[in-house]
Amino acid sequence: MVTYTARRFVSLVGVMLGISAVSFTLTALAPGDPAYSLLHLQQPGTEPSAEAVGALRAELGLNDPAPVRYLRWLGGAVLGDLGVSYRSGQPVAAEIAARMPATLILAGTSLAVGLGVGMPFGVFAAVRPRSWWDAVSRVLALLGASVPTYLLGLLLILVFAARLKLLPAFGSGTARHLILPTAALAAGITAQIMRLTRASMLETLRQPFVRTASVKGLSATRVTVWHGLRNAALPVVTATGLASGHLLGGAVMVETIFSREGVGKYAVDAIFVRDYPVIQGAVLYTALVFVVANFAVDLLYHWIDPRLRHA
Amino acid sequence: MLEGHDPARPRLLSLLLRDPVTAVAVGIVALALCAAVAAPLLAPHDPAAQQLEHAFSPPSERFPLGADHLGRDMLSRLLYGGRATLFSAGLVLALTIAVAVVVGLSAGYYGGWVDACLMRLADLLLAFPSLLLAVAIAGTLGPNLLNVVLALAVVGWAGYARILRGMVMSCRQEEYVQAAVALGAPPRRIMGRHILCNTIGPMIVLASLDVGAIILGIAGLNFLGLGMQPPGAEWGAMLHAAQPHLQTDPQLLLVPGTAIFVAVLSFNLVGDALRDALDPTSTD
Image 1 (cartoon, each protein chain N blue to C red):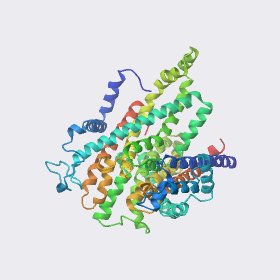
Image 2: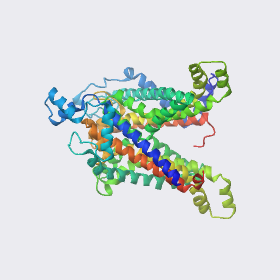
Image 3: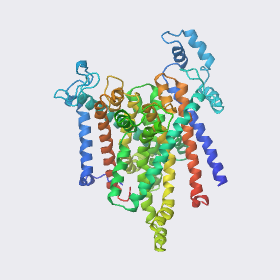
Image 4: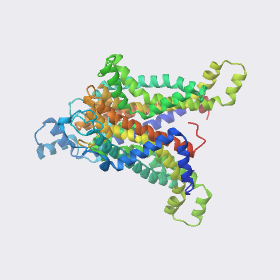
């Protein structure tokens, strides 16, 4: 376990370096000269002079070769310095740190709903295959996979906030503000987890050890949950790691629709004012959260499944 | 595995049409594709023509689905919007598969450091939350529809390339490939003729499962305002435009929203049915 953790940790660092390189390369895609954009943003309406642009390029070190700029940026990023937002003039890292909790809370509640609803429903569907309940869960899963997060979000606002006036549509702060965004974000992964649990559960319930358990006279609940679900949960754990990527990506949409001040909305807002350090930083940090989440899932997997530990 | 012979095709279609739900989905997909191709012929109005005096007008003989906040015909916008959405989805799919084929074939065939480099690159892209990366790429390149397509292709190819690589590696061990090598066939011929022809079928089935998700991605990026710019019509962009009028005129939202939902649902159903038809062993 220790060697495994160490080996995974080394590859984690490798992936993080790769992620930083991709995030850095993003700015290379940006059309135009960043120094020009920066000056243009600071003094809107005026055309920056060539000398001013040249001076700023030298000051920002934009004339250095790309590898040098990357290493300098990486050195800063490791120490939590991602540069300064073109728009607000504030350090990007601090602005992201202020918004990350909102995003993580939203992703966390959505994951909790996804697991809390998806797993039991999937188990019910697997215990009674081809029942009406199985059919309903199949339809729900298909709907969940086909309805766009953004459409669901807008419909939820329309029904529960605009028409019924039950819940607040915009902003954040209280638990009530979380309900609609969570519902919008959780729908897709709930469907996914439900289908996966059902498939995995069906597979497990066919195994000889499950038959042995029921023949031995254990109650149906104990067989299903203790012998069935514990084994069937393994692929679901892996899927949870991948689902965290969907959640972090989906948070971009959901935060924008519900005006939640999270990292996703921060990135989208930055796009329209060409605030490249912010886009870069938001992508870097969110990807890091995703990678660390998957790292944790991997370790968890090895902890849950003793077979892997001895492999 | 897919058969390349013609007799397989009618059987596949009849297999798809046996289940009534799938048959309806196939019909909707066919209808949507025809409507997208024929949008200029079918649309009653110019999708960009503003008639401000008819803004927000309810469905009528003149505007079968009503008019939007600028008095543009919703039906025409829906048709042209579908054209934009579905055509760009097709383009994303084509680009994704093209890149995946080149990468997957090279990695699987040559192995060694080529494989190592390409697969590390693929792993790297898979390490990002894909939607966020697509948003960042499309946003950085600048808002227009082509950039949305490029962004989705950039984040999309890695998964396919990895699967194709696996198939290529196992295909390489087959005797007919060994025979082709022994006969002195050049690598390009072996890869194209012997390996690709036997791996592309499952790839396409895999891709058909993904069309719904690609449409969601395109409409999603457009919804954020990153794709089609006004006055162009695209389903996601129509949702974006409808957002400020959500409370007063929800029909502006419901028309493109329903279109996206029904299209994605139908493509997902067809993809599922295609997989079930070609791979009877899959349980889910």
